[in-house]
Amino acid sequence: MLMHFYWAVIRRESQKLLKQRDRLAAAMVRPVLWLWIIGGGMQALAGGDYTARLLPGIVGMTLLFGGMVGGLSIALDKDAGTMRLLVTAPVKTHHILIAKTLGAAIGALVQMGLLIALLLALEGLYTLLFPLGFDLQEILPWVGRTLWPQLHVLLPGAALAALACAALGVLCGTFAKSIDGFAVMMNFVIFPVFFFSGALYPIDPMPALARWVALVNPFSYCVDLLRHAFSSHAEFGLMFATLVLVGATVAMLIVATWKFSQSGAAVPLNQ
Image (cartoon, rainbow, N blue to C red; front, side):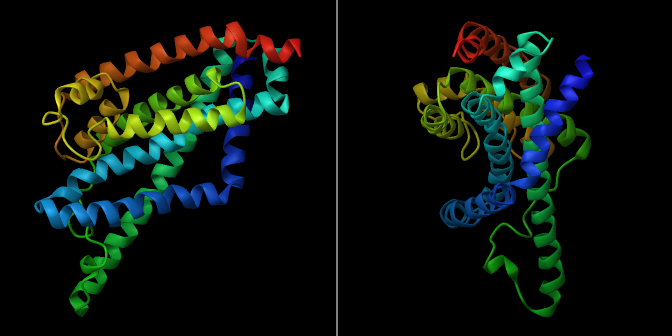
């Protein structure tokens, strides 16, 4: 029964993702724009291998935006009344949130896979055109400089990072009382989480307060796992980043379950 419940929730979330082609397109266009504009500009200023440093952060951004949709799904289900059906299912509250987290994490991984496939295609185009005298690097500054990931590190690292990002989204969704409230909360959370991490620049040279914020920010460790996978400027040990992310994911789900039990599950049933 429990496995059927998980399968039903995850399948529903996956079907919604596949129907939202604009969301899948945005998952590829947004990171490419960041690589093109931010990466190109900073490469010109900083020189060196800035785009190699930026790429894991941009892949992490895709996971962050994709995972946060788990919270939007909770807000939408509350608004549509679907949550009333879920809370009446013969499963405990935390199973609902874990299933939502898994569904959002899978969606985030699909979006990351599409992004990496697009970047690989651009790398192939660069390799094909360069002998013909056309340097694609003049248009897309990161091609030809990309360090490609070690799959044995990328696959488990990205899966754990996606779960952490999805758990963050679910946590926000349990605190949001409406879709509009979640939109405000998402903007309030997602950009500080992204900027106070090692996605765009190293943590160590940050001002003291910003550095402490980055060190308690779970997304910093998501990015660092991806840096290990891309062999690019990792700032923490692989095992340390893994343990921090596991602990942060469990902690966020515990808080989300408590909040959902207090209000998220009860309010829809009483209306």
